[in-house]
Length: 99
Image (tube, rainbow, N blue to C red; front, top):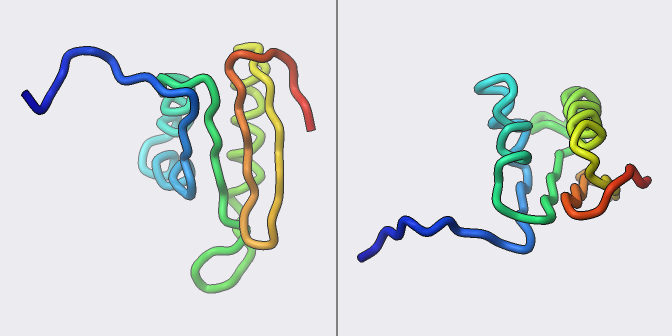
């Protein structure tokens, strides 16, 4: 059998350059994905530039929405930045926001 009815769980989930695409197609879908994915840690990445090289203006609003979700749920959030991407690490097991 290729499909099982048992839920798949993981220690961590990587949503690399995915969240903003899902959220743009259906408002609230990115937050729902982070909230409902069966993983204790979720790492979300946002590109800092769009395909034409301009600054990605969607990063800040999505980061703010993730922070609000984490605050509401009592999850810890850590952030990291590279020259091309910003990462948000959501820890569903630890409470409180970190920077």
